[in-house]
Length: 217
Image (cartoon, rainbow, N blue to C red; front, top):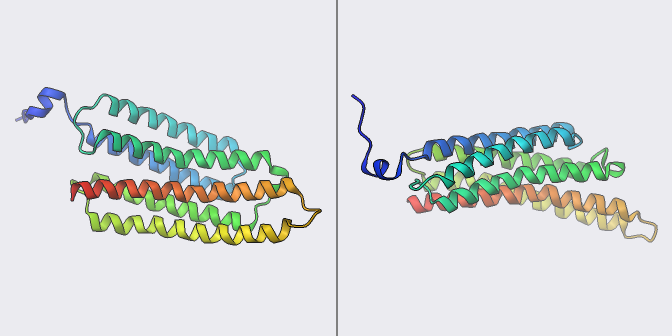
């Protein structure tokens, strides 16, 4: 026998919770795939990164439409919207970094070790974020477990901070002379900052999910 809809569903329509989480996981999957491609190509494949960004944009549009047409959700709709946009920002950041590499390819066609380290760290933070997002499928978020998974993102962000500090010290030593190439300094310094921002964006997403868990605790 088919179960009759509850009072809330009759008044406001069915909940879109499962569909929202499913789309969010797909968005996180695009982010992980994009990060892996960025690493594999040293960020040199701008058209490929743009293709990932466009896939993400379509998913974001679907999520926005879903949330705009929802009344009752497990998570507050503004929180769900913000989390979606923050995940999208991570992918947009990879597109920005790839565009920067393309613009300054004269200096960045062969990335320095510090840049590659930041790329690997960013990818690790996105993988940890994806694991955290999958937890949204659970009937109720476990605050201790959510914090544990978020800690992996925080650790990646801390490692990125250490890498960029070391890289910037090296840049100061290398480009402090009067004959230093200013354009090369700009290319490297900005690239390091953009790559480090990936882990910052992932950390913000992790904090949002921990906040959701805290509200359910």
